[in-house]
Image (tube, rainbow, N blue to C red):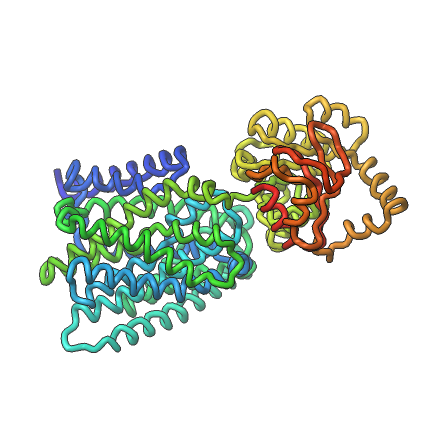
Length: 619
């Protein structure tokens, strides 16, 4: 077969294997990287021997991988909005500074002690393994319903540490291959690439924003043209910086993505969707090609010492770094344990390590083996183990919050979302009106654009994980369909629907759905204002810090509790005002004995006290 035919066959096989890996990963709800690594091994010299470095050539492979990583980093950074970072600003800052430093020093020490490598090579490995990466974190967060602040901290860390790892690794590599240089070279090289990346990235990002907002892209094809312009802009940002200083392109692409993602531009949703599809294709291609270059012999050479390094990184260094870098933040102790237990490495360490190993092989084969072997061992172990077990880890730590889905992002839906979120619950809104979606998203709510009566849209909004679905649109037909799907298709425990016309209440009742008649709700609120004005005013006050909430008693010591003994354990300002048992509602007295499964109605003056009381009652 001719060289062109061999290359075409390899590319087709790699792309096909990549698509298959992505589909299988989506089906099993695990990060696709694990299947991409496996696919790479199968098509590489250790398997079918269809893909090798000779097929592409070193120079072409460097260019392909570089441009691909630039697109991947840009896409991840495009989603890093200032509002998202504000979900966990202290934790994000700690993870990309203190956490990154501990990862660098700890990993370098582990590699040096295990393999007796020089410190410069050990720091090269450590610098690469700083990166966790959005390519592996985001798929995990898509299937593990943790609180938004946890996902925001992990995804922010992944995006920013990708850049830090790439630049620091290149700066360290220059020191490794140089002769007679001092460690000051690392700082100079790091600073130069970071500054260049910032300048080029901000410039390209703002230029793209101006073009998208001012240039006539033609009415019929504006969304398509906007997507293409952004794709070219990402490549330009990477290319301008990369041709000036190697690996500055990754910083430029990331900064351009962050800049563009945090300004108002038309067609933002379709741009994000298109970029996501391109990134999946590029990611699949690069990961498979890089994995195809792996040698089992090199991995075997590391032996038990390689496994010890992986254990040190996963079990010791990562948890310590997370614990120290998140002190004083919003994350609970269990959430910090989860973040420490989930730190899979992704495309940046894989790509840079492979290219460095190719350069080191002729002069320092031992360093090349340690570098690529250690990096891929950590990638494989963290992706397979942490990615596969992330959901179980979250469930075991009991950090999966109550997931509430509200269909209809109008005034009623937004008010519901605000109330649920004030109690610490995770809320996703669904609305078919794009302008409403943008308004709600700007207000800081999580929202999915689409028809709430479409099962695919509800699935994207995680209806399958929801404990509560509220149909709150102004259309009773839509609310009725949403309620049917939630009960029958997604098996949601609690479904509440808004009935705008009294004559439709019977139709909702037939579905065994809790129905709120708009007319009755207004009359009830007016009655409260007349007969219970203090309580009505308190509940209607948007500035209040407390709430009324019903909680199921599931604590292990439920059978030993009375209202009096439980009240002594509750925070100050919290009262149990009603106990519901098997449909019987009673106002309790201090001597009333409680039973497992009782529903307790709480009144708390402060949200923090409410959260503490809920934790006590639920055990």
